[in-house]
Length: 264
Image (tube, rainbow, N blue to C red; front, side):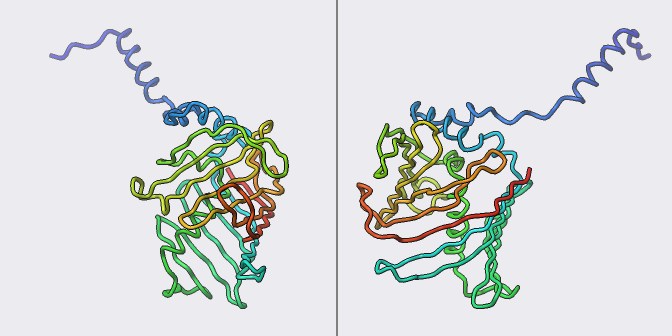
């Protein structure tokens, strides 16, 4: 014979069941926890401040989609135009990543679609079997990386260190954060690049960066930016071939952005 629970016990069990059933899902880790893996405390402090200045990590992680217009011109050392394009970029982050870049070339619509880690190029709506998958992937990931700085510095395997204060050629005082990447240790890294990122000393927004590639240096200046729903995005950038001391050798590329749309 089964013994019945007293009325008070049954009520207590019911209340506990209701409380457990109504529990909220675990909250996203606070920003401090997201930066806790950075061993260099000065680098952690600067990145924390920069993330706030650029829109806030918590808000960035809530973004479902980012869309914008981009035009660029690549230049040869003699000043001749190597290539140029006018593109629309649509980056869907949630519920799953889907990147799309579209433009028109010689009267034909072109599109790169990147989803589930696989890039596909379409011309006139048909898959382009001649496109190099590795080149397409690098194009997509580099485009997302640049417009997502400094938030992308939290990606797994990024080695961050603090380099102190500096003054750029235009007289702007900055703090310097170095990010290095090792593809031998992390498959997500495509090349062993080292970045020096320059954040305004007072406002802490990203103003320029120097990238050491395998065979050259690139120095990029953010000339103008804009605020969209609290996020700071570039409007105009110039990229120069440079040396290790930031001496400019020649103008390599110009970039213009417009019509940013942020969706949550």
